[in-house]
Image (cartoon, rainbow, N blue to C red):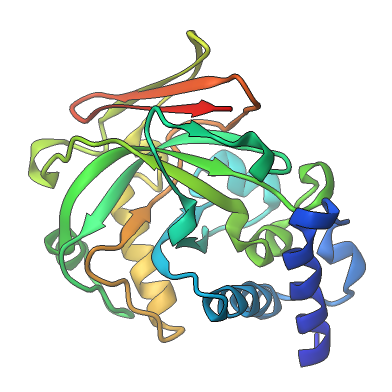
Length: 259
């Protein structure tokens, strides 16, 4: 893709929340590659920053073996978390903001100092974490019917849309993230279960991958930023009237309500 084609793809994605989902980019732009997809993502983020938005963190996607197999990939992807992505737990979230919303439980890292790769180690990542929080990530797709390939979801900011954070911080030393179990309830019914080990063996591994991957692109994970390392179980659709709660062993719970 040349620069004009990348810009056209970014403009179409930016317009999708007003005009509706668009066909898969990979079916529209022949020869789209990994660098093209991240460039399209970055063009959108740059445009939103020019409109006054700010970056508050990053998310990692495609961290489960099942999702990687589904899309035929061997590593995760990443996207940006912007300031207007964050909602308070129990406070109604307007479902009209989303096109095809789904939700998934994650443990969120909050950083106390910057992380800059490449070359970040597990020990350096651990020392950069201030605390962890229970979280629910709301994912959305601007691609019709979620018919996404790897490059589609990367260009679409890794399908990131919103996040609800719990309000009880836990020091990283107080919980074994690999063995941490989680249960997600939707409208009082169990909608999914999982454990931290589903995220690349440990959510810490996801944080290391992110720091090194974005670092190679000149990006620093800043102090105070929120990092979502990946879901511990499969996402489920949500709509107006739904209430979703994720409960994590050793971390507490977080609830999202949709109006």
